[in-house]
Image (tube, rainbow, N blue to C red; front, side, top):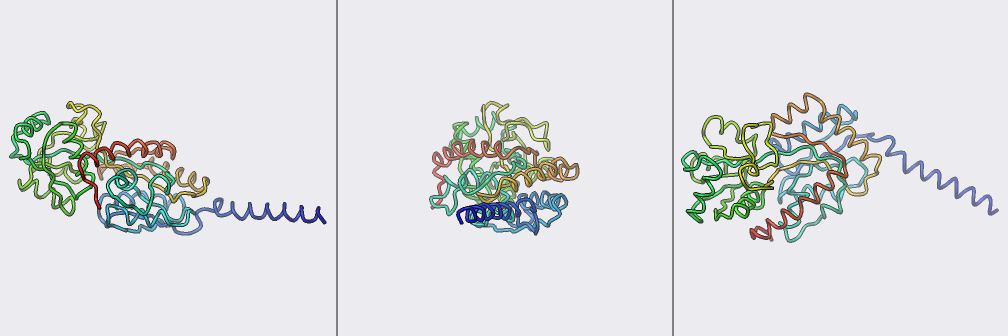
Length: 324
């Protein structure tokens, strides 16, 4: 009897193992939801659609974009964090969701480090320090000198309180040791329009959103905020090159899955993502969007997220930007 029971248990264990492994080995067997924290038409949405379309081709299943804007990305993040970890709900995360919001918001219903498994860092978007042409500063050094000579008299616009453009300005204030005043708008477009109109003197704007205005002379570009120059404006020096060493206010986007997603599924998604990022058409579409493509391993992406958290936590605390 014991032998029969033992054989039954061994057989049951084997059957359960096969049943558990089967979904991963057959993945994907149905459409995949890709949650995006911003409205349709914005840079994050367009990026997700470019990558999602190629992943559809590679994995033979549709990638359905779910736009869940609001609360600085927290609505989308919470939905994705609570989804079943089976590879059928993914999140196009960014620096706000995965690195900044834990310090920015006093209460979150998700933990960015605990609740997500990294897949790959898709790419970075440079922020460009631009000023209205009437501002008497033709270089970053001249702008800093002007701000120091006129404390509290220069304003910088952003797409909203706690947004990447706001925190880039706060980091600049701290590193350059200047007193410039933040003016928050409901979106990047109205903020940029007021810089162009001269109502606000300066802004840290994404490269793709501002390059046309730079070329037309509506704004003057002084520096790029990424550690390396951006391919979209290769002639524009970085803030680091111009004297504020180590300055990095990069907007980045990366693919993550709910924590506990099987390793085999993460490997499948990572491999497909890397193939997508090597595709010539995908690369061109992303570069036209102002994205400098990265592509890395899940562990490298995890380490990158961890390195971003303390930097932005310090900026949030120093600026008093925390949101109730």
